Length: 462
Image (cartoon, rainbow, N blue to C red; front, side, top):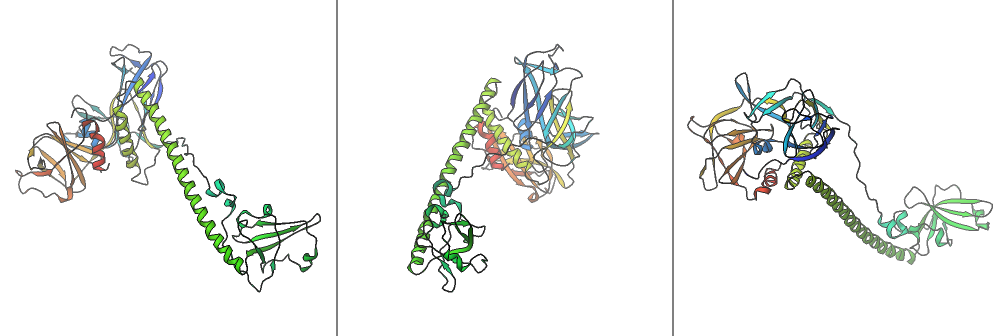
């Protein structure tokens, strides 16, 4: 379908010095120096543009028209992909090539932790795959990960010195416990006690410092210090000669207790409001900063794409692909974000990390697709098997192997309209005879062609 295609990314490098190119979807391509030639074998110098298309899944294969059938010793199989890419190079609009004997080193994000995948090369003219002699290695690359900056703004610290500790709920004085009444200077109080009036300090039973004779000493200074225990403090008296510190809790008597409770509730509400305001301000600041970061990142991508003659519409579809890639790699806890397949290539082209998919529980039947009105659509169609990461192109009315388990998507195009259907294969009934068909009900994609790629991924939740 014109305008519906898998996005490509274009990066430039100097052919004389070579380069390591890192693409948005994780492919890394190392190109040696002085390794590029034209169609006649003449050495190329200067700037060369590399077009990289990464095909993630069956949707990409179907849209690109890539045949996933594989003929081995006369037997037809389907290939199950774990990562596919196409690399082509151009200078001034003319295609250029890798000179004989040179090698590209490629690192491709793995979609599976399995090791039984081989490397295949695609012949786009004949639409056939040929197996390479070497198997791609599966490795966990160590990449530098920069943790995003985090903001830790406290409502207490931003607005009030009471941030230093949790606000203690006032306690009523125990008439059987010793209480110390002293005027502590405001600056010598802990912040959370400054809001209360007429605070007294009740001596804890576990205190071993207090002596009655201390009441006869001329102290120069009194202050309150925190302990690691919530609601428990040290009441400290000192002069030029000595210092004593008692374990105490703040308490209130009579009407002072009722007043302290009211003060406590008012302060709690004030602090709650401050925290909410601060959180809202922090979230707004972080959202603005993230928006600015994304804006600058997009501006950089657009500038680079523009410089390389990149189709800017591809940037959005690349983002849709990237979300899909991240989702694929997070579906299994054994799939590590840095798991990659490494291999070497002696030419530009289309390459796939594949293994053969052998499905035994299937039927062979003609396929028919219909629109909402029940009218038969006579265009070729594609069956997408997302779990196996493969697709199958089928001509109208042709026999097709249909698995009897799992899930599939069906795509077709007729009169420039794109149709899709989601199918539970376990619900398919084998036809009673070879003349009967397996029929799928299709839904038209209501989206402009340029947005159909993202729309399809959204509908398929892939």
